[in-house]
Length: 458
Image (cartoon, rainbow, N blue to C red):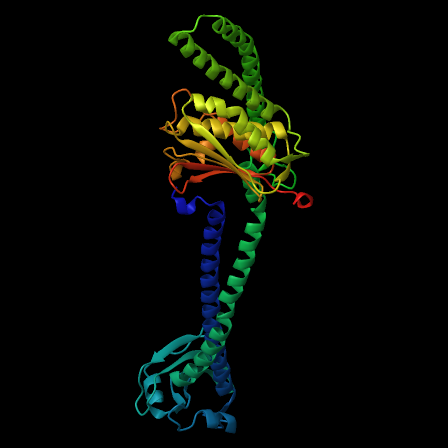
């Protein structure tokens, strides 16, 4: 199936358009055929009536012969005009009673006698006449007995009738495609309206993700044909939600179980004499402790909704994070700097979650910044916090995926788990804000946390 026909709307509309076009063509053709057939039928009927009039105009003479006495109306029709009608009447014995013109009478004398069923003829040319003729022959009763009557009309007279019919037909025929287009437009609108629930379902389905596993596709007001599919999808989502719940519970349990052994190992290392190996082990255990804390943060974010109703000053939170991490950053041969906004930057949020988000960005910057460089944390009056470094930066194609769980770029440190920035994104989502990364003016990366500012706090 080609991509052009994958659309359900196209699959419905294309056959409908073909059907309407074929229907319009058939209808126009039928009207044209019916119009010409009616015109020919009327012409044949008129010829039959003319033949009857001629038979009624025949009288028997005292000597027994037959004589045609045309009324004035018929004389005008069978005159000497180039387009006048022609006729010929023969007796049952084959004697020519009357004819107009004489050349037609001479021709008819050689024809077989007419029958009660109309027999039609066509004369492409006739001596003395400029047009061709068509007509019929009938055997009719008259006052002088049975006679054969042939009546013909010039093609010019029928051409006028056909011309009038053509004008009428084509004046009417153009209305049919217009009506068909109008009907087709209404049908397409009806199809689009019928498919609206599908588009709504698509929008809802697009919003379902790891953090919104409780969302289900609505089954109300759906076409009956779609109900089984939507019900099956919802059952699949139920199973996925159960799987995510089991996974989250496992992550939380594993993190809790790891905290006690790591605390024991940390205590044991602290009691050992200092040596390079002990320091390396302490560093590894610290990383494991940080990973456990991140796993617990993920579990908390998934399990409960954050209370973001408190008033938080971003200046205070960011300053505290920088003060807490500065010694650790110096131990990593990096320095931290803080640039505060001139006024308090008040937002509605959760102070602990915001602290965790800024901390994760600072730790990420220290991990990627070159030795001896400075990481700058700043707050702005518009309710945003930025963390900039002088590291390699984030390629543009990775700037969306970098906030996904467990996603790690090619230049990511080997010890990273890919959770820090995912936690940042989840925290900002809970606050109704956003997290983004751009390139710094002097290179490196600049991460920005944009919080919505409450109107009464500005």
